[in-house]
Length: 407
Image (tube, rainbow, N blue to C red; front, side):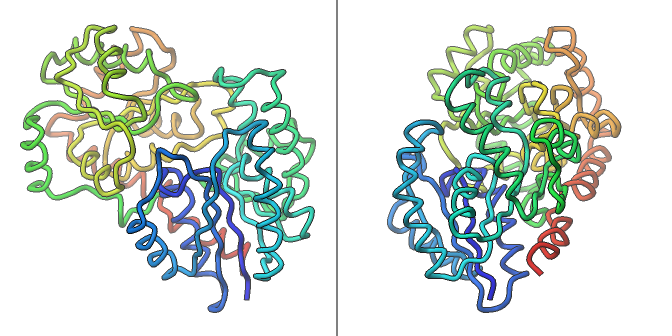
């Protein structure tokens, strides 16, 4: 028996839990002995609340993978989060001993703070997954201040996590160098994986299904760009709408946008008006959609954008969205120096990389996309992109890592 406590800093229904935690836990579950269990902690936001029926369905589905869900209230990282830790920590200490937990598996460094403290108290093995800089990234993108409490706390614990970890699974091989420079050491068990995608789930729909959905949205022959993600924080907002404006100037009213994002329709319209975009050409979905719905909209799109702020620490990240976009065969517009993805796009000619965030680069990007989304190259490019996803982002490629850790 090898029981695992998995820690996240996300709500269960958040896309990151669904795409960047659950698929890996299901792989881990297969590697564990038959009588083992995984206990998954999520921190719930009101905006991602579940009904009783949803909770019941989730509980049953997770049980089939030997996973038990533990839901706690979310607090923004900082002082309030630390105040809530004693109650959560006490519960998890008892859980570790009562359920004979052997491994504490943390997704990203904010969850790793709790994982590190638990590991020190219980002496359970600490595994850091999706290992990348978070504290410095929050300062670089303007969310935190260098002298602020949140930064100081998280950076301190990032160093402590690294020194205590039995194994780390980094999102970039460059994290070896970063870890040595910033934390003064490189963990002995160091693994590397790009954020992976279940290609059996993320795959294009049939032509008939795509045609029906496009007809329902009244965008039959239009050029459709999609963005799935947030605005602000680590993501560009005004620059994204400037890019949309450039595309609108190039294609006119034939250019349409789908936004599956966290901002309201009113905010979308304010940004559209600011950059003289026709609001009627923007379809927006504030709040979470089901994974199936997201895949449906990805399938009818012609290309995608991933407006990650190109701050220095993002050289060590691996955006999940690029993998999902590629799995659907979509060319992607991405800023430069975003993990390994910018280089992959540039080297394979499967999208456009923004060397600068200016009108000239936006125009060049749209011209590049224009050549990729029209026949006869379109289907050939689509298959090429899917093959890139298979090579770099197939979740099956991560199985050997988890097998090595949990064998």
